[in-house]
Image (tube, rainbow, N blue to C red; front, side, top):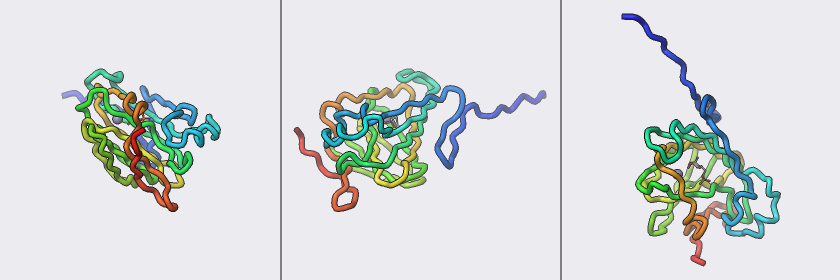
Length: 192
Ligand code: M6P
Ligand code: ZN
């Protein structure tokens, strides 16, 4: 029997910082300019510096989006801050392949995962270092940073999943994470 080489991983995820490195890792940035229309107080958003970075996402997708055959992962670095009384947050989305789930694992910081089902029922889970969150199929998901430091979390989903932002752009979430009397709360959002 001849020994074969044991090779190092081609991609690494730093467990302390969440930083993903290696072949095939891509990065994207979302600024306040790109989140026009997502926050409750659009006038407050428009009055802020449009180049303010809200979040960065480092992704490792072994298959292209929409093509089956892999599990993808991504680290999101979501900055602290607010637009009016609403905490900085990701856009949020449903999945194009609606029966596909996702998982979020918090690395550092303090956040809220907002989950909205097909009937637009919204609930929320606290994100803390080490917390693990199952996003069920057919459930829109968005993350808000309620802390004072960056919120870092790692997401896992099947490569064939795909993102669907249409419904969120059109109708938003039925609840928003806002600072009420100095504390974060999930506040029902009346339909327009
Ligand atoms: C997580 C995952 C990604 C998503 C990112 C930012 O990392 O859910 O798939 O792209 O958050 O969220 P969004 O695309 O909704 O702005
Ligand atoms: Zn998703």
